[in-house]
Amino acid sequence: MSQQRHGNTPGKTGAVPAFPDLPEATIARLPEYLRALHNLAETGADTVSSEGLAAAAGVNSAKLRKDLSHLGSYGTRGVGYDVALLIDQIEYILGLDQRRAVALVGVGNLGHALAGYDGFASRGFRIVALFDADPERVGKPINGLLVRHIDELGRAVVEEGITIGVIATPAGAAQGVADELVTAGVTSILNFAPCVLSVPAGVDVRKVDLAIELQILSFHEHRKASLTALPGGRAEQAGNQEAVGS
Amino acid sequence: MSQQRHGNTPGKTGAVPAFPDLPEATIARLPEYLRALHNLAETGADTVSSEGLAAAAGVNSAKLRKDLSHLGSYGTRGVGYDVALLIDQIEYILGLDQRRAVALVGVGNLGHALAGYDGFASRGFRIVALFDADPERVGKPINGLLVRHIDELGRAVVEEGITIGVIATPAGAAQGVADELVTAGVTSILNFAPCVLSVPAGVDVRKVDLAIELQILSFHEHRKASLTALPGGRAEQAGNQEAVGS
DNA sequence: AGGCGCTTGTGAAGGCGTGCACAAATCGCG
DNA sequence: CGCGATTTGTGCACGCCTTCACAAGCGCCT
Ligand SMILES: NC(=O)c1ccc[n+]([C@@H]2O[C@H](COP(=O)([O-])OP(=O)(O)OC[C@H]3O[C@@H](n4cnc5c(N)ncnc54)[C@H](O)[C@@H]3O)[C@@H](O)[C@H]2O)c1
Ligand SMILES: NC(=O)c1ccc[n+]([C@@H]2O[C@H](COP(=O)([O-])OP(=O)(O)OC[C@H]3O[C@@H](n4cnc5c(N)ncnc54)[C@H](O)[C@@H]3O)[C@@H](O)[C@H]2O)c1
Image 1 (cartoon, rainbow over the protein chains, first blue to last red):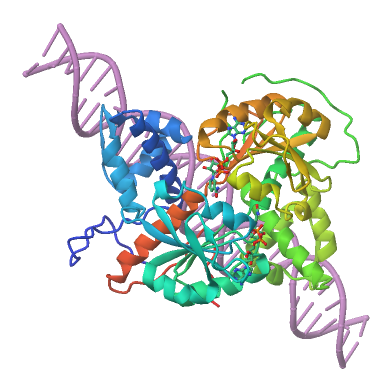
Image 2: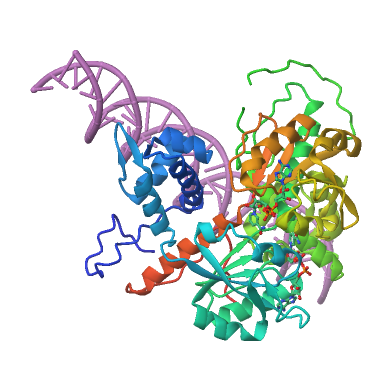
């Protein structure tokens, strides 16, 4: 592991500053801060305190300050954080200054919804290509984009500069699609299929499984139900996700 | 919020054993184990070792053993875990022995996909009611279920025994919908709208934000790109989600 | 019956993340 | 110019989670 301290990399190309190695937990919260900041910017706020931003993002203010301190010192004591500056900083760190090209594989039930979603554009992403294996679907337009056959994946990745692939195929096909994405040069995958993907080192996989989310909620339902019969049935919040009193 | 009932409930119904308080991290993995176990059961396996199950679930075997040990001792040394028994145990812990009734609010782009998804049924959930505020959509059937007006929420929750609500409305409407769900008696919410929800203590909220997932991937892309220019640019796996070598 | 190989369950150690509490820094104002 | 109000940045302690390593337990084979 690299023991690099504060990011003064000696012989570095001056254009790109040393990349801070942020805690994974911090990274996962930055998008939330970013969204809150965009909301604030729309209301015309120039600056925001850690307290205010923390509330908007649904986190502890100390946590927020520590998170932001990892990026550098972009706040002013006694004043707060400059909203526009912080937006730029976070977007830079997240690599959103360039709008990233995304490929979506599997244009079925869920894929349709994703392809038709305009919310990605405003958050830094462009879905530039849709793929499916079903000849029935290939060639048809969705939201102004033609569905292409999966065989064209390799070419499209190069031509469109795709770095992220989204898998919305049945679980049985997901590993195969992942392999094809990796072969084509994609190094980040978002997987909606309920299965474990195996990819080479250097490729990042994130998974979204709605049934798992529901099952976690179900567990807490079960727990709450069994607690109502117990003395001092205190309701606890879920820990991971907030449950703020009104 | 500091209201705490003092109640001595001495005689517990012997049917329900004391509820183990599992680490939150363990709970989040149980659904993954469960899915892997169901896959194994389909292949006809009677038992599985911690090593085997861990591989199928994409985790470390030591972690898996510790997770399972929290449920009790359901393995046999020298042999492994009884697949069927473990499935029953995990399903019981997760409260899936009763099929939970789910309400879906917001039958738009994404809501349609969710309503038409048959994968929930096999994982312990029934979507029993669809709601929307748009009169255009109310009354129309989706996947054999009529879309009802949001005003009927309260009655439906009671009649259908709904405990989980899924929000798939625009962000602006989400807090209002959450309030209505809570008022109606729902104590668990899965939120797809990109916003922070505020709910009273005792209500669990989980959030799925696809843009956040993409932005986390984007960060790692950015990091990887900046590392390629560095000496010894070794690719590390994402930490949270697996990136196993083939 | 006894030994041997295999696998579970767990004690212990280390790392990571969180939140408190406070010093340092900045602004506004008299 | 100094002072108080305000807010950031962070040292520190604590708890949770992960991982290693191994003793204890189980079944099979001889
Ligand atoms: N629909 C939902 O709300 C929902 C919810 C949670 C999870 N999921 C998961 O998302 C995935 C997709 O769900 P869905 O409901 O859209 O399924 P779907 O069957 O409607 O769509 C799957 C699509 O993938 C295509 N496909 C199959 N094999 C392919 C291949 N090798 N290459 C390219 N395309 C291929 C099919 O032609 C089809 O169009 C599934 O894994 C499902 O479990 C869906
Ligand atoms: N479509 C996607 O792939 C996708 C991806 C990520 C996130 N999301 C999020 O999911 C949510 C829904 O997305 P969508 O694309 O389905 O939007 P949509 O506009 O297609 O659908 C929203 C639906 O909610 C209904 N609605 C609005 N206010 C309501 C209210 N007060 N009560 C009940 N129903 C109400 C609308 O009538 C509409 O049918 C949004 O918050 C979006 O940001 C969607």
